[in-house]
Amino acid sequence: MRIAIIDKYISEKEVFSLTGKNVHPIAITGNGDECGKLIDNAPLLSHGTVCAALLTEFVLDSDYIAISVAPNKNDDFVVQNICYALSWCLNNPTDYICISAGTTNWRASQPMKSLTKRLSESGTKIVAAVSPDSALTFPACYPWVIGVQYEEDCRSINWVSSSSLGYDAVVGNFDSNVLNNLSQQDDFFKTRSSSMAVPYFVGHLMRHEIFPFYPKDCFCMTDSKLQEYIQKIPIVRVMSKEIDVLVNLMREFQENEYMAALITIGIDTDWSKLIVNAYDYFSFYSAVIALKNASIILVDSRCAFFSGKIGFDYSIDLHEISTVLAYNSIISKFK
Image 1: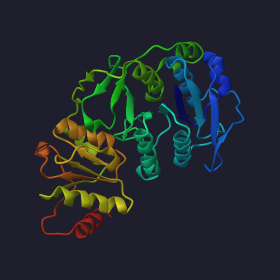
Image 2: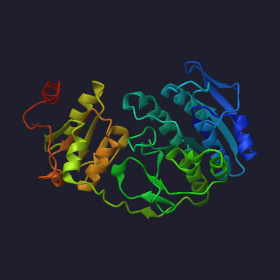
Image 3: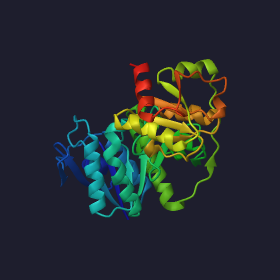
Image 4: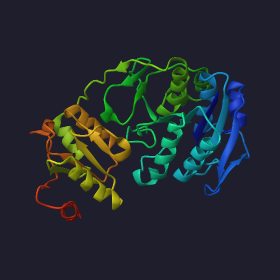
């Protein structure tokens, strides 16, 4: 079984000191134009090193490939380097990929879409962490990727039942020899995160494949607090009988490099296209939390749940106006 973990910086030597397991280190170097070169692997207790150590703890008897997308310990990673790592996995058949380094930047994420889909179609299972603030995270939100969110109050591991959350599975508190040992030196390691939960989840996924649904409770949020929250994003009520017209308006924004999302009742949720099927107040609110980095949210007027609860920043009727004119009208409103 070959399993790859993609993270910012992973120290082969430090993983071995933590678990006694060997990982095969690969680096994406420079500006992302070189793949497969071994890194100058200085010991470093980095985020990626800890996640790789957890992978060797929870996934047994595998060929561990540790891909650093920022091979120098002080470097930031770029999305293009993640794409080079994914390309390496395409060219070197991989059973599982753990991704703890993602992005909430929709524009920057676009090159990852086709690569992760091709990997999934080839049979590779991809598991990715959700951002710590629960914002929509790429590639975790793609339909062909399993997005993992850590929640301390969750019981064990469960699939979520709402598609409006932007992720697929919830991991609760879990025990780890690696983290227990590290916590004796630093209290930070007493806590858990979505990135840490990914290798734990993969270990269980390889053994069990099926988990029960985790019934998400409705958020305890007053209407006034919700209004305060959604004021950060322009939310436009759009009237049209044709779903295609709504989608075309959303694409008009996206083609002009806006992170525009559509909340509707007529299409299944597809986070890769920023389309969310919100069928009640809870699913709408969940979607807004995930879309906290969006430039604009378009809401289908046929969504009845918002009646009297949600104050829109603008409304527009598409029955007698083209999508281009509607786009220009909305843009002029929010200049």
